[in-house]
Amino acid sequence: MTLVDFANLLVAAVLLAGIYAVMSVGMTVIYGVMKIVNLAHAGFMMLGAYFAMELFERLHLDPIVAALAVFPIMAIVGIAVYYLLVRWLPQSDKPTLPSLLLMFGLWLVLQNLGYVIWGNEDRSIFTPRTFDVIHAGPIILPTIRVYVFAAGAGCVLLLEALLNWTWFGRALRALVQNRYAGQIVGVDDQKIASLTFGLGIGFAGLAGALLASLYSFNPDFGRPFLIRAFVIIVLGGLESVSGVAIGALVLALVESFAIIWLPAGYQLAVSFGLLVVVLIVLPGGIASLIGRVRRLA
Amino acid sequence: MTGARLRIFLPPIALLGVLLLLPAFGIQPNAVRLLFVTFVWMTASIAWNLLGGFAGQVSFGFAVFYGVGAYAAAILIDGGRLNPYLALVAAGMTAAIASVLIGLPTFRLRGPYFAIATIGVSETVRVVATNLEFTGGASGYRITEPRPFNQAEHYYTALIVAALAFAVSLFISRHKFGLGLIAINQDEDAAADTGVNPFVYKLKAHAVAAFLTGVAGGVFARYAAFIHPNGVFGFPISVQILLMPVIGGLGTVWGPVIGGVVIGVIEEEIVAYFPQVHLLIYGLLLIVIVLFEPGGILGAIRRLQRWVRRIRDRQAGKRTADARSKKPDEVLWGAGSGPGR
Image 1 (cartoon, rainbow over the protein chains, first blue to last red):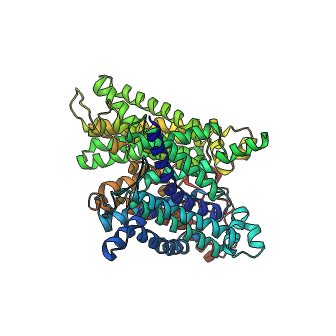
Image 2 (image 1 turned 60 degrees about the vertical axis):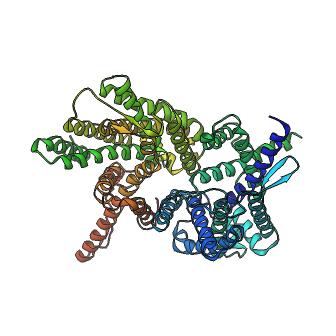
Image 3 (image 1 turned 90 degrees about the horizontal axis):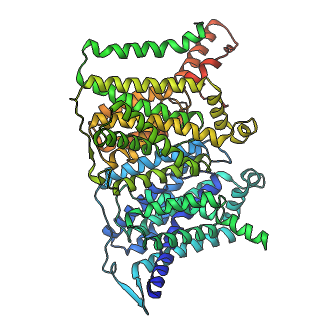
């Protein structure tokens, strides 16, 4: 492998990491506040992809603009789902079996609604720009991936700002730390939870919509990404946006460089293999590794 | 036998007797096929319930064991020319070994994390099976047996396997091992403090469940005579296996049996007319059950019974609730959905 190949792979991995972070961050915030592992995430990603396609085909929006427009739509969908279904789940500070089964059932429903509405053929979003590339010296950048990365990374940074600098963000973080204590000091946990669920689903939709301009999709879209999101969360720890970003980067690097040794068909096996290795070697994720290093220093 | 024992053992034995005699009365081949499919599903359902119901470790990856069992049986019967029944046992063993290999890393995760990891396992296994040589790849594997096809033989095989699975489930529910699993379900740390090693218990339950599911997969493979990775390793198989105990009543002995019958009938009768929407129906069922009756069908029956009893008591002018202990029956039929669950 020449240095140029290496640089190309590295850049590709970083670009991939951006989109991975977008899809994982939605799961993380929902988990943080409600302690619900959102198995329906893949279903919402699929919806986001199809919404982006509809916006692109009917209103002729630019795919990236369409993806950004999908965010508020999906956020509203998420809030509606929260009030319809999620609210009735028994509250707990641990993930519960009913919540898991409910989200799983919701995923099945969404996926098969997708089949009913859009059929089962593969769809994709093509623009004249789809195959454009930017040459930065010897490094070749597909333009669309750069845009997707910029949009995704921008939204994740916005989320980080939202969490740190607004009252909503502070309330959300309070609930993440301790739901009951948050209630005591006057955080309306129902309201924050519903907004958080909307935020998480919005990010799921955004991730799906952004992925839609990179890959083809069908109603089964998202399942491999659900597993990747999970690997990222385990890697990065469930607490923070920066943890998710690091996890996304690690997974993207491993996947990109594994292509050198493994056929592409096994790519999913790579992410799962990484999960197994992480669970055995450092069950606490990268955060625990950093903590350990810090303690030693 | 004392009364309590009679109540536990008589219904399954009577049911088994009826089902054993049924083909002798000359029922239609289509009905035999429906029963066969139901028994296969029921076996997997009972197996899943050992881990998912008793121990509360939901797995979305039982298609792995179903598929491994199907392929092991297929390859041993077709390529190895092994006695079909030995091949079924070997299929179960292979699945059990696979379960240990999967369980060693994934049982480091608790509850829901384990559940998501199993989605990863089943996806990975499906991808690998599609790319391997000896499974016939994506084009599938055909099983030819020297003996001619005999539907009654398949019927009895499936029935005996399902009966064995039930016996295992009943045995576990009445012994220390089962109590340990239930303790893990309720509180893993507390269980560990009382001398139950959760990791080992889960591994064992996983292995037993995988064995039974693998045998079920082998039985099905023999009957179908053709299998392919996207079929037997497919995600819908995992979904169905998980759904049966949830519908019937999680963590009970009879729940998965009832769920198996329900799904067997839905699968054969409804899906035939609406092939597009069966996962949609399953999803809606799951949502409705979780939100309205977490105890499944058995829970609903219990609730109905309580309701009827309360009305009857009120009419009789009694004010006290029924204080008789239901303990011996609880694990069989479910305890309803009181605040403790």
